[in-house]
Image (cartoon, rainbow, N blue to C red; front, side, top):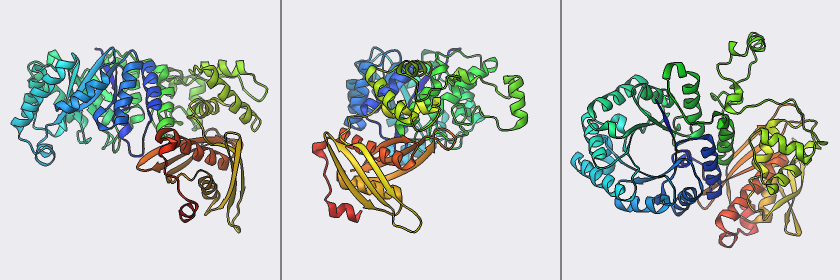
Length: 516
């Protein structure tokens, strides 16, 4: 049986608290999802905001291969706006939804069952006038009355729906229960053979992947989810986990997929980097420890025969090992070749930026690992236009002095320098940068991760800053964590300038910054 993979990283995934992707970032993820081989990309919710509309439109125009879907509530205004954005795709889909559970009808929609049923008939028919491929979702299906749910699904298919999606919207179902629901739908909806049966599970009880697999066992043909399982609250079905479960246990599920599994790891890292959402170390499939063995017994077994303790080959998800060590004497050709082996195809401009950062890093540590290279590409090849560039940083700190930072930022041909004190060295550095840029942002998140081990490990800092209700993610890398922190903060401020437009930024005065 062929299972279709519907990716909602750019729609439901982007609804994760603190995540805000710009159009170029969404395009980059969409192109990578196409390389991964997903069948459908849900590009966004066009009526939600002008930015969402433009992102869906750009993805529909530029990304080829997968079906491009746009989400809409089941009313004409939403559907018009969704079609206006997604119409440029060679394979467009309109995805319309309305809630069907009694609790949603009573408290959210304030509609009767008859009114919802009529809305489904008219809404799906209206979407069908625009697009042959129409998906319908009864929101909160897993808590809906089954008789009414089957009545709604029958009406949706009669009105022209080609895909019927069953959401476990609040992650309430358990695998046996959800499996029985899918089996009931297949048995009780008389025209179900005219549509693809899909599921969309949330992870509030940690059961999203298990529920999706139970649905497949009972006849579901499409699974919706997000890379790294990101999404509202506890997230969605983690697609990398679902995909590898189906590949690894093909003997049990007997399913076919169109996925290029070697692209899984790179897709996961890209989504993590651009969203600013770190991957937990013990995360299945893509976590740092997913293929690590510390126990002596396990190490001995793996060395003798990999399959003693590894049910998957790391190379299958794109984790490759290479004995070539890159260092400060390595040239541009060697760097390009290694990056291509890792799956990165850079333009000359991107390669030049990555090579310059590679040389700078190689002067500080003996050997450059694949993780170092991934971090370099993530930070150098995806830069936004930079008004400010970190020129120099000097920090004075200790447990008996007030931390003080002196920062120099290059702006064109000019270097502007400021100093500031803070509660700690990072705080001092950020305050000195604020004095130069005068962009009144609030720091919402700061995290530090060691890209590799050892005393000369590269530190990767992620910051999230808020400007007028919008969140911007900045990243910086260096063997010096204070420098990495300053780079990340400057990167975030450059994104604010790029996204908002310099002419629209309300600069703070010095007194306001001192108070902050």
